[in-house]
Each structure stands twice: as C-alpha cells, then as structure tokens.
Length: 63
Image (cartoon, rainbow, N blue to C red; front, side):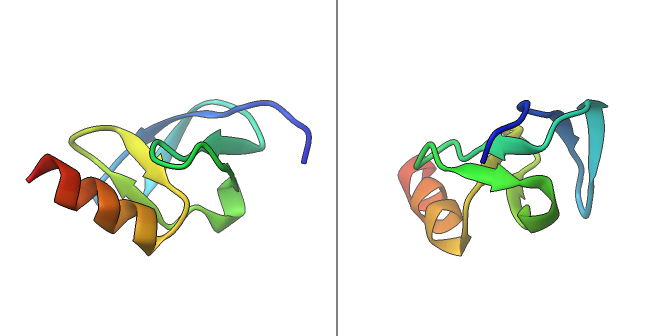
C-alpha cells in the first residue's frame, strides 16, 4: 500500500482530515490503516489504532 500519510484530528465519533492522504499509522503496532478502514482512535491522545486489540492494549497501558 503506497500513498501519503494523512494528518487527522480525531473527534468523538468521527475525524477531520487536516492533510489529505491515504492512510494513518497505528500508534501501537505501526501498521498502516487505510482511512476507509479506520475505526479505532483515542480523542485525548490523538492516536489511531489498527483494531480493537491495539486500542485495548493502549488503554491497559495507560491505566
């Protein structure tokens, strides 16, 4: 998957595209996430997660 990394502002139930791109990078695993597949993020930390597994891992780590 080639393309440019997007810059996003993560909101409660959506995200705002600040800079166009095709994907973002998971803050936990480093995996590329196509914007159309992006479902998990943390608004407070402004981080994206590849899946519920990475999101849960991060949640547990910051407790």
